[in-house]
Length: 458
Figure 1 (tube, helix red, strand yellow):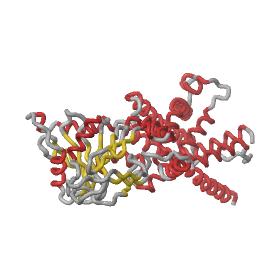
Figure 2 (cartoon, helix red, strand yellow; figure 1 turned 45 degrees about the horizontal axis):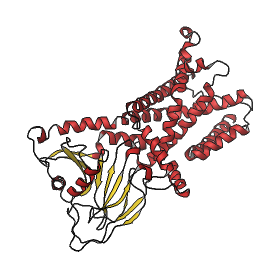
Figure 3 (cartoon, helix red, strand yellow; figure 1 turned 30 degrees about the horizontal axis):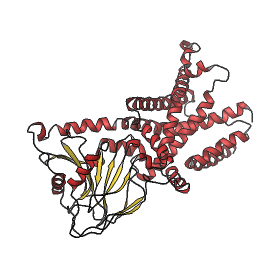
């Protein structure tokens, strides 16, 4: 295949994929950019609620954690206690209790000093929860997650093909990174200006966007499922994967401290931020012992000074364990502790160094993806990448709109020489293996392309 034929073929792929991906790229960029500031937004939101606490007016002693839970349970009799988020510091006047009640996940801010409910919200309508669902599933569950993964896969292909198309080919690297400083821009047609913007932005942010796309793949359905399978196959499965937990305390009596504690099976499904499949059994409970209180759990956790926010989940079933997790967005700083329900003794304590190498590597990538690994500069890079994706999408569509004859798609024509070189075939095969949804969609796209060409010939 000649270089001209290859260029035209790559341009056609880039064009078709770009029109398909552009609207989704803008959605993912906007939601991803907003989510970079999750901690700041939720801190601002919480500060408004905390300002109504009695602590600001009348200094008083904090109530036991069990009183705070009782107050929340009294708001929703028959509700199920899911978790409580500890105050971030001694100066934080509220604890956050999460309940399942009336078919909703309720988030209650409870005053530590008066046990009053300062705010009661549907957690699923929280701004950052909605932003995260749009970013990950387009508010469409698993089906939406597959769509997001498909679009992300094609965005990876777009970046790779874009690099090939924008390669200088003897024009010099100034043309690549500073395209508006080369040539006479005052006489440049509008479409050529959009092209320079598209190429220049891609040159500056392309690799950043590529990194964010790859680090987002572990959250997806097909790629993420394959990654988990591979991790298990090579012995890299460990604490932190999205599997099932079986944790057991010692022998027990039926004397839960709170009627609202979860009464499901000891085997329970957990979300993406929770722990991996483990089976633990603590020592036998001594005669006459009772379950430890929530306040005792608070006291134990406070002494260990886990990075905030810290979530405490109750024992699952009659003989489960208390689970304490630091959910700081900087994932390498996270810790997890499981406490025996009857004695309060540690059953398992997991720190970042305990996790397999592959999971640690993935955690670094996720922390960067969320703008949490190295402070404000990480957030700044994320914002630049998000603005870059929006600029690339808008400029790409504008280029097409300026070029197309009215009422026509005007896709770049297929080259006369349709053979693929061994090198290009190897690249396509590698991408197909790495991105399974790309591979499936490529087969469908090629079949449709052949059908369209056949219809044109008749």
